[in-house]
Picture 1 (cartoon, rainbow, N blue to C red):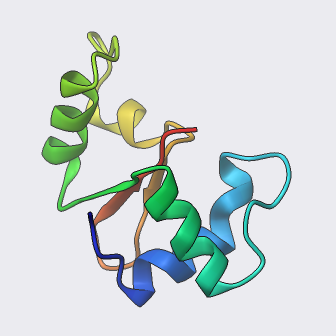
Picture 2 (picture 1 turned 120 degrees about the vertical axis):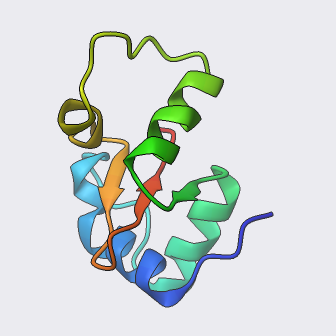
Length: 87
């Protein structure tokens, strides 16, 4: 199981409405539990995000990195990493 650091959890808590119409977490603890439950993944860079979607069987052919990183499931983290949350 992936360990989520404070940057990941707090960013998801702040930006969760990017993916969900209603809040799924009200606190850092709830956000971390949600990320664990949905098996979210932290990627170091755009290349890892692309690999994640390819391994998941998503049809991302024809999408450049910019388009891929704008997907609702992809949360840009302040330190340059990306959080991918499957809805």
